[in-house]
Image (cartoon, rainbow over all chains, first blue to last red; front, side, top):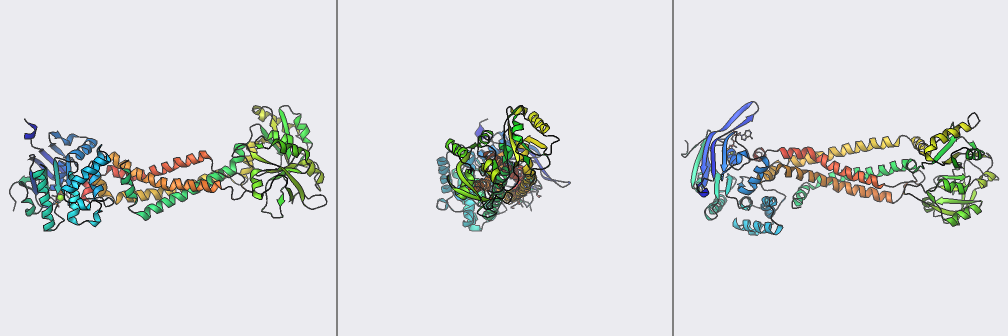
Amino acid sequence: MDVSQQPLVRLEGVEKSFQRGSEQIHVLANLSLQVGRGEFLALMGPSGSGKSTLLNLVGGLDRPTAGAVEIDGERIDQLSERQLAAWRARHVGLVFQFYNLLPMLNAERNVELPLLLTHLSRGERREHVRVALEVVGLSHRTRHYPRTLSGGEQQRVGIARAIVNDPTLLLCDEPTGDLDRKTGDEILTLLQALNRDQGKTIIMVTHDPHASARATRTLYLEKGQFSTEKPE
Amino acid sequence: MKFVSLVWCNLRRKKLRTWLTILSVFVAFVLFGLLCALKEAFTAGVAVAGADRLIARHKVSLIMLLPESYSRRMRQIPGVDSAVHFTWFNGIYQDDARNFFASMPISDPEEFLKIFPEYVLPESARKEWMATRTGAIVGRSLAGRFGWKVGDQVPLKSPIWPRKGGGAWEFKIVGIYEGAKRATDTSGFYFRYDYFDEARMRGEGEVGWYAIRVADPDQAERVASALDAEFVNSPFETKTEPEGAFAQGFAQQIGDIGTMLIAILSAVFFTILLVAGNTMAQAVRERTEELGLLKAVGFTNGLVLVLVLAESTLIAMAGGLTGLGAAWLITAGGSPMPSVLPVFYLPPHLLLVGLGMIFGLGLIAGLLPALDAMRLRIAVALRRQA
Ligand SMILES: Nc1ncnc2c1ncn2[C@@H]1O[C@H](COP(=O)(O)OP(=O)(O)OP(=O)(O)O)[C@@H](O)[C@H]1O
Ligand SMILES: [Mg+2]
């Protein structure tokens, strides 16, 4: 089969449970999912349903208790810690609700962080950073520190950091959750453009139906299972 | 290199805390440097002691005197190369008790310089000394202390040895000797015994102690026993020991300095370890999300460990290197109390020990927090903010 025909993300029988004290919490049970290349998937569901947990598994930030996580044909659940770190650096971009910028670094340096792990020269890194900030429309704020940026601007920096390595997969956990409607819309427009114009595959967790409307597909997660219909 | 600025910006985060930590490390290393110099000062005599030299003193006490006539008998003992005697003079300059230094008459300038080759005296000065009855030689540091030059007349008073007819003893500086090694004491004032013995009011023929050079250092023990055996059952029995042991005994009269200094240093470094360790622990704790983020974008556990260790090492270096440097500058300025501590400097090997301790401190203080940072699980670290 042609590689480009394969789904980019494939989860097979994934289980995830946490140990909390003596109690075992089953968050995901026998979950399967396929996300094709170029999809913009919105993931909805009540709080505590395991959306972030699922995103962590797809992004290689955590490992499933059982099952297979395959990204672009690679079983990332079988990689070593070190390999997984290198894999994350190359293949995923992460966008968070609270932006997770380093307060001591300016916008430019925050965006540069993932590039520090590459062999790029200083000049090449600078160029990549410039392009990424331009894509998110922040060319005029490159030297600003996070505390001097608005929420929307901080999230743009966060997105620039996520795309600076040119990953195929963007994982966004409530990217507009902390923004007002108008600013949130701008961020969604940006994500949509990245999906449409740059072919990024996006999985976005959101509570906002307004946001999920921008996606090409929406899945609801409840009690560890998916449904395509919004549960009552 | 590209990670250095990452470490640097973390140090700037809590500037006051960083500065206070650096300051406490600084103080600790200044203290370390000074205590090392102090220890060196007390043990210098032991370190430079000639392996071929014995010291013979009165068996009962160092302050009891021996007959001058022992010189001749000592020289006849097999294995003895030469012998010179000293008497504690306690000369005081300008009637001020603070102007005190080691001053003593020695029996024979020629023998003296032969037995103590670490005192380097120009040939002309030596000839002058032989020719000048009231001649005295002074060490470089002592000469510097009072600004004495060759040819100066120096009057000294001795509370122990009054002069016949009263008044001060008059000496003429005939030479200034240098130390062959850095640890050589150049604060001495030596003059001729013949002048001293003739002019002293009492105690004629009595001297303080003897320095004996043995022909073969390996035979030193045997010669020492032979010397003591020679004078056994006389009214003036001797106790002869290698110069190193003699100097050590001298230092131990002041207390076991070495042990004391090590105890102080251990306490200082234990404290500083806690201070620096606590700083690093706080630094890591308040950055949990950021460390999680770094790992999320692909920083390996090992790299995160190194970054934290680099941070604590940088703090240790900032405080430690400046502290050692300051201690070095202070000691380079010379002894604060030349009369008590004639030799006072920071020996290079202890400087190296200091460097080792700086890195040790940085690594140990950073280790536990760094391990915490390394073990931090991303999913958990990132959740903290939500
Ligand atoms: N590291 C962990 N240790 C223990 N329990 C955890 C851990 N991570 C998640 N959980 C639990 O797993 C469940 C799912 O958490 P998750 O964060 O995935 O939910 P979510 O769908 O993202 O919720 P929200 O919409 O509030 O962000 C919750 O009950 C949570 O308490
Ligand atoms: Mg969540």
